[in-house]
Length: 264
Image 1: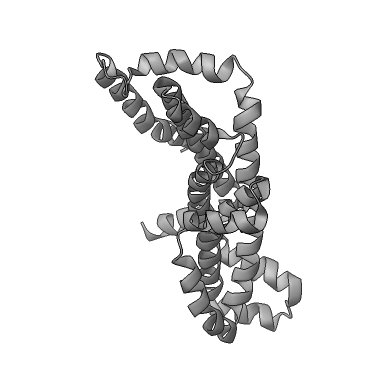
Image 2: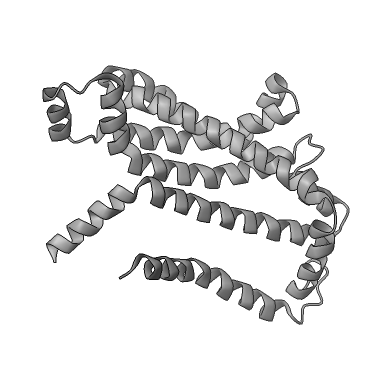
């Protein structure tokens, strides 16, 4: 099967369910007379007026994306860095594990009031809220990925004198990269949720702020347009993460395909 055909099939598979759900929503809400559940056709017509013919994309959506990506990027740096250190040393892992389990059990939204005390109500607080949720899946998956490095490969690199940064990059990080990317994908989903939650507290812009303002002013149709936009952004970010995963882990998917071909 050619690469183009595989990409086409993957795109169809990714879009099929959203399209089906969208059609069901359109048909199911067509005759709706509820003020709180307007027809999808009305939501879409309002969407254009609210988001495309105003400056809201630049004033509210762009700041939200910047906060999300800043928090997610910082969580990746911290999660991978700490995960490599903790996963590479059994004593460090035994020392840190109780604290990690305690901190992981705290729901990130609970930290919003605490972070507001230390970081204020500006962008720093919102970025830290995103970091507090994205960090754990990345960190824990990195720890498990580093622990699972193949002993034969580790011994081979030791015999060939591959040490220091070369060993860290070509053996440890590369071997753990499938689980690291899995943690990143999980962390991104959590980050989108926390981005919205953080903007509902003492904010003056952002997608979460706009949605809650629509709700408080009983602009229900406009509120639904914000929810729809949030879903579209999440879908596009998920597609972007899938493309990133395919590019970074092309060797891993090629290895799995070769193993499947060899076992048949």
